[in-house]
Length: 230
Image 1: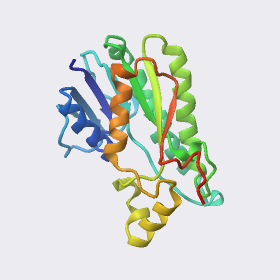
Image 2: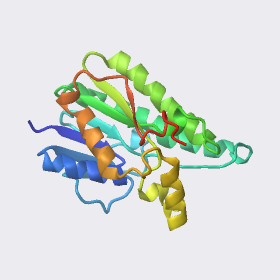
Image 3: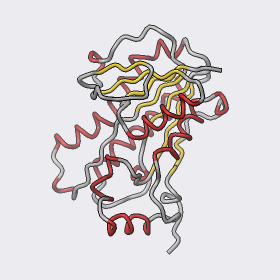
Image 4: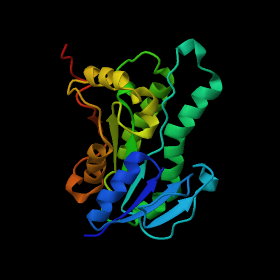
């Protein structure tokens, strides 16, 4: 059965991988992005930001919504400015809330609609220099649970919490053989996550196969958040 999915942050590496898998499954994709040179979406809307008033009008019903934008701002706590804290919160949490507010009417018209948000392993596991992103992503996890309760039983809301992945956002942490090897050794499965691995989980949570899953944060992190192997 063909479904229509809305991807905010359509330029992200994971969004592109999810769109490719969605197309293979004969689903329709609508992208929203601050970048215009994106392939793979059936329809693309370019915006200046994810502020509520900047988001485009979409008339058709939506069966699933994914908010992909994220940030990785790692600094010692004493060096974080108020502006940096606010930017991370706006990109990760406030943006997600505003996109959901904008397209809630379209989701209500969808078939077994589903929302997928993104957290991070750092929201549950204390990690040095991660204070800003951990705060923002913990807000996303709180938003997930709150909306899952508020929207039940009609709209499911879940969250994915990856560890470090091989994407352009994380390039500066993996751009030498030494950095890559060190990151792999920190992971219980001794590997860095790939976009297609997370994309398949996104599509599952959007699908009717996940019709009894809501209010959950799934750790897709190679065991980083729960395992100690050394």
